[in-house]
Length: 201
Image (cartoon, rainbow, N blue to C red; front, side, top):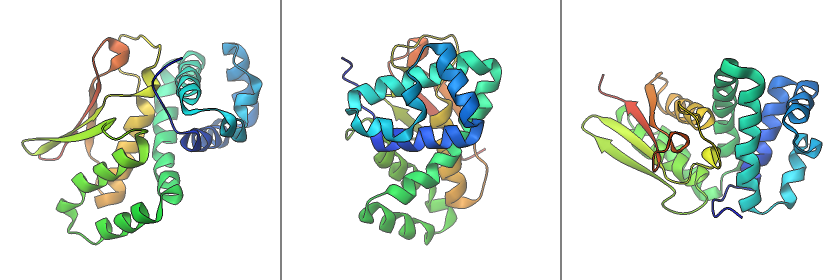
């Protein structure tokens, strides 16, 4: 059993968003082609799983989508990640919702780092799973858990959902499209997944 963990609540939102994006029939075809349980098309199925098994399902489902759609999977998963940001805010604790409101009251240049820190808290299963670092004028989000990559191996980065989440949370913060690059990925053999956000360009 993997030690990696992923929130069943976020997984339910992911499956719900995926089903709405590609349609129930296509979702069933993706699962069938990959030999995955048909029950995975139902968001409530994941309420009964622990967060270790949920991490495995999260990884395997994204792998199935990449196999089914090929190069087109990137765009689909980016869009799902973008839609997940609002779902994370909707499901957040009272304290995190209050923090989100405070963030929107800050001057725009001061919103980005605390908004990414909020994303790290909402997305990470354990404290320290996701951390934020300053690179001169730019920012680096480091995901040491990265359940997307569990059991995966690829010659290019695969964390498109996380990338979409980062992109959307920054756009929510200041209304600007920022350049984001996954410059290291555990699926490629790196120790952690690293996302560079260019602020000063």
